[in-house]
Length: 635
Image (cartoon, rainbow, N blue to C red; front, side):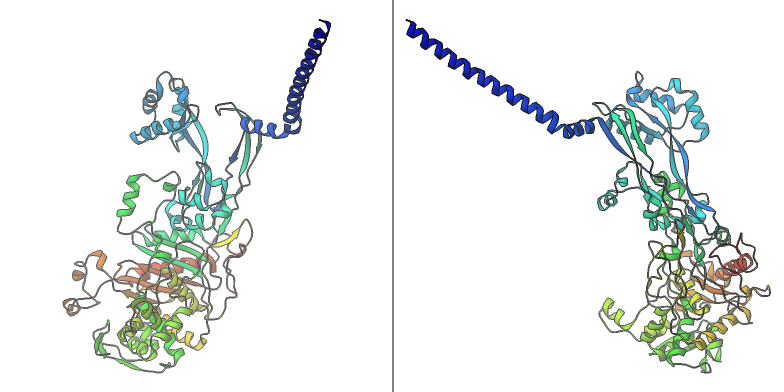
């Protein structure tokens, strides 16, 4: 009996020991696990806890400002007020009832209502939804006074891009807009993911967007389990974008715009030595402020349906035949290539036959036996037909490209087009056959396959007037107070053209404007010391019929002109430089369907060059003499 009891006690003791050991192992494992979690992994789980409790928000920085050459603001940020609604606070009347009440105080369109209802469904109940943007101060006051009757509605203060000079700078500055899906996909800047962030979409705003954008700030906020913000824990303000200073003189820009008036045109004025663009207008234009908050469908349709294409910057993206303005290139190329000399005479009888084709001069009675000087002065077609025939297309093309035709001039704006300057190789590659000889003479007077931009016209006349230097037009003077690395600066390289050839053409251009029988003589500047030189041009947009040519050809009577639809009228061109004694300014213009350059294009350039000389050479521009890098008075 005692033996059994002893065995039972031993068995119980072993089981108790096993059970105790198991319990101790479990307790040890639990303690070990607790130690691991609370000591070894403490920092990791603290971080996870904070990530669930603390949200890091990016703060958009103020966008850099844009100024003209004298410090006048062209683009800034301004305060804007918007009405927002919080769904959970709109009870008991609900979203519809609150919007009805708000609509009795300020305008709330059906489109606004649909957008608000859609956004409320997509977002959490405590997230504010915008109802109306860019409220006037009067609207803000009305909402605040009636806030008791508008549950869930409040006023928020934000910033929007503002362009004080509106249409005068629309094409130069461009505008800002919301980030598209494609832009977001291709970018690595987290700023672009912010829902209300705006980036440059066109013009300088796009070209200098990286500089203007700035660096994001941050805000650490504590949130609850459903994401509602409880409090802000830390805030680091962003770094504002760099200010950009342009070469534009807004006073000159406004003057050019007023001078162009209602014409559909593009005009550029630049310093022929530095390449700084003082004014560049494409008309009609658009107000970039319309794009800051989003363009409505009605305005968008109005822009698209306008036959004068106000959304296109014609100065850099409009392409046109240069017409007779190209004759200076033909003359220089023929002189340089030995096809003619300054004394070579070619007889113009009103028409000629070249390559078995009859070619007409704009003057049906002809110009008689003339040299290149008089051919430029009177814009004789026959002379330049023959000069081009003797020279050949490839030599003509090579010289034209030196002056900036057939490729982008390199302006610091997006969207520039290169135009076309044909050659034998170009024609073979694009058409798959040999160059037709008849096109050589067409190119000699700026017709055929040649197309240029108005900016290229200003570049050509500047390179002729500055002694054959490859000046590059540009718009940016400084970024963040420093000269940008991509800004072209003089001295510009030589084009390799003899000064003697340039002088012959310059004298011919002076005669165009200042001598009787010159094609721009009625538009001359008569103020002593301010005289200009230049060259007129008419570019056909269609071929004249035999009947039209019989009724007067290019010199149609007013009654016949009025029968021609606006879209079928010739473009009017002019390129000019001033002053004659010491050229400083170059200007090129195209008036779409302006018909007669002497009546449409020349008067505009006359006014622009006269005003530029008075502003800068006579010292009437603001701080012109003391402005660093500004156009300085000669001597």
